[in-house]
Each structure stands twice: as structure tokens, then as C-alpha cells.
Length: 626
Image 1 (cartoon, helix red, strand yellow):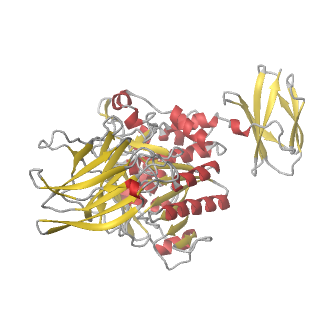
Image 2 (spheres, rainbow, N blue to C red):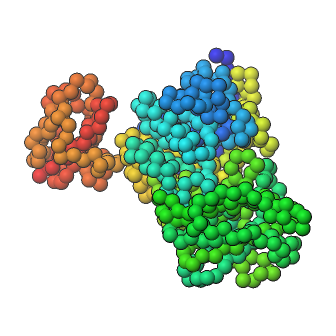
């Protein structure tokens, strides 16, 4: 295969070979460069042996960042385009088109047109997670990980299908899987993190899949309302629902509403003139009357104003009533929301509604000066689905800190757009923050939607490939997904709960995290180096067993110092690691079929864990040293 690079890219590649691979500010901010270099580690880690699944839109399968750093080995295993119906579909599914292997993917070029046209977002996110840089210094976090791409439709079943397809492929490959999701909506599942998506996340988490998602980009919008009807029984809460003045593909506003369990509520839309005088109102809709969906309109001064409502009286997960009011934008009028209930803690979110696809951009609730008894919105509880699911690692965004001049530093603060927690149930969400402001990464060369500036261009196989700077928790999410790949390469036998705990416990805190607080940063900033170091020294207590597999026996146990490990297996390579109960690695070596001596005489008395790995299974045995 003929490969050509522009001179500027060749120069960058030369710099990479001399150890300057991490010129991008985000990489040193997250201590990823120290992991690549293997500083104080048994080796450098680059995500090798781990699969990163990206659910998104706008994949350029041909982009050179998806080769290895030598521009030879192609690292995308498969892609599933759920919108392209020519087939063949993946095994077990009856829609979309699956591309398997380099030849099919490279011949397909990119995913097909979908509600986001020919996008670029998926390429940018995947390149942050594990792009190899294509000769530039914009190398992703896990540049030797492999990829699965799913161009998916945002419906419950399509999302679940994409996850299961990725899991099935990872099982066939025999590798750990991390799924990165730089998207979120306020209309799937329940805002408390329960529902069919949450159920599937928990099932796949139990099978070892690590999910990472973006926290959202509504931290600078007062798009949320919380009102306690239990304290204000019989009151009517009113607010002005601001709509965006201009937005691509704008249809109007979508108001998602929910009250406490078994606490029905009523809502109405108010139509106002430019002085906020109420000139018309829609009939109240009462959630206690049952599930309902209605496309309707109201006539005001001979103008027809179109709106839609969807009501769910209750649901099997939390018994909470919920509703969505969708209002078509009108340039002449302003719209207000009126809600009343006998009791309960009521929440509402105001986001744009697009003419196609989904909207998730927050728009403020406002208290007009003409109505001092109305209420304004806030930027709290901004975490949507799937970020509100407990098992998922939810990622905020901050500006990477870097040094310039004579030791001066810049950056480090939370990105103003990064959505604020807490979660709907007051849980800590987001959990971790990563660089997500002005992150340079690859852009699809087939995009029809990107209109910004490019940072650099690389020529590869006669085609120009671009890199651009984007901001959002969409960028910080794959950064953490890449870190998870580094962690799983270092210790592929960690449970998902352990991976989360490692990321939480090794997070960096500083004056910026203290100033912004946990609702913006979670536990702090991602620290890849400390996370990998801790992963190397962690053994899963879930693997402890008093009755270990009969392939391995230990005698005597308890022991005074000398014991023997008998291996009844035909495996040619069996690696072991001995841990103390703090998770610290005491010794590593290899045993062979037959009887092997294990010398523990120099170790203090206590309990130890011997973990044996034959490449097919992991067995942990407890050893007591007198």
C-alpha cells in the first residue's frame, strides 16, 4: 500500500521518534505521557489488547489516525452503520450494514448519511481515545487499542443493540471492552438513572464491559427548574421558557418534566406578548388521567401555534409521573409554563427540539421582571441519559493546564459549558473530569457539516486528512475511555467496580477542583499515571475462593514459609502474581505443569493472594503465612 505524508507531518513524525510524542496539552494534563514512557512502571502502556467501542456518528474509516504509529497496521476491527440498509447486517441483527476487516472498511470510506448528514464527531472522539496521530503530535490516549464503530440511532433498542454487538465482537476477540459514548438526551429512560438502558448497562457491566460517557454541555445554561410542591401545596409554579433565537435545524423547545413517585401533576402552556402579558393558555393536562400523546394547536390572534405533549402517568421503575411538552418556535410570541401539584419534588429541563435527530442543548427558564412571583431556572441536575446511570463513568470537562514562558501556567479550570450535577438522586455525578476544551483531534475527511478552521493537514494515500480543535464533554469522555484502556492493559482482570474505584481514588485535586466543587468536577481530574500504577497493584477480592479450581493445589496451606503449587494443566504458559491484602504485588513469575516451589519465608505473617493465569482463566488462591 502506497503511503505518502506531507513534509510537515514527516517532521512531526521525526519529533515523535525522539520522545516528543506528547506535545498536545491534554496528554500531560492527564499524566498520559508518563504512562506511555513507563516511568516507574514495568513497561509503557498504550492500550494494546483492549477494544474501544465508539457509539457516535461521522466516522471516517480511512483516516490515518486509525492505523498504528508506523502507518502500517489498521486498528478498526468492525463498524456497524445502523442507517445503511443495504446489508449485510451483523449476525443476530436484521438491520444496518456491518463492515468486517480492513478491506471492507476502507472500501466503504465512511458511514452513510444520517440525521447528522455526513458528520465528523465520531472521528474526532475516536481519535482522542486512541488515534495514533498520523505523524502529528495529536496522538490519542491509547494509540495501540483497537476500535469498533457503531453509527447508531438514538432509540432504546438501537442503543442496546449497538452495545451487544460490541460485546459479542469483544468476546470473539477475547479482549476487554470499554464503550465510549459522547452523547446524551433527556428523553430516554428516566432521569433517576433507571429504565431499560440502565438494566442493560448493569447486565453488561456484570460481564466486564466498562462504560464511559460525557456529562453534557449545559453547565452555562439555567435550563433546569426544581420546585417543592410538598412545601407549597396548591401553588402554581410559573416560568418563562426561553427559546433560542437561531440554531441549525431548530424546530422549537422541548420541556421534559417529572414529579416524585405517585405524585401526579398538571401543566399548561401560556402564550405571551413581548411585554409578557398572558394572552392565551392551553388547557391543563393532568398526568393522573393516564398515558397520552397528542399533536395539537392553539389559535391566537388568527395565528396557529403548534405543540405536542406526551404523558406517562407512571412507570414500572420509579412510579413517577412524567411528561414532555414540545412547542414549535414562533417569532411573535413568548411561551410560559404553568405547573401545579398537590405534593412532590418537581423537576423540568428546557432543551432545543431539532427538525431532525435529537436536541440536547439547554435553553434557560427565566423569571420576567413583569412577573416577580415566577421562578427562574438554574444549571443544576444537568446530567441526562446515559450519564445518570450509576454504573457508567460520567466525565466532566476542564481546560488542560500547561506551562509556558518562564514557568508560568495557564488553564486548569472547569469548562464553563461542562454540565453540573448532582444526579437526580443526589448521587455524585459527574465523577471525574478530563481535558475537553479546545482539544485538537482528527476530523472526518468526508464531512458535509464541519465549517470551522483546521489546525493541520496530513496527506495519506493521495487524500488530505484534517485535524481541528473542538470543545465539549464529547472530547473529555473519550479521553477517559482511553485511560480505561490503559488501565485494562495493565490489569485486564479488574472488575468494572474496581476500574471506577481506581479512577475515583487516584483523581487529582487542586485549587480549581476545590473552587468549582464536586458538582462540576466529581472526584477531581483524571490521573492516568496514578490510575495505572494502582491497577498494577490491585487484585480483585471478587476472585478470592476457598475451593479453587482443581487444576491448582497449594500445600501446605497455612505455611511456615515454603509451600508447593501443583499444576494439573496442559497449559504451556501459566503466569502468577502474589499479592498482599492491600493489593500490592509481592512477586511475579511463571509456573509449569507439575510441582513448583513457592518461597514465602522472607514475607511477614499474614494472608496473601496467589493469582494464576493460563490465558484462558484466572484463578485466585488464598495462602496463609504463619
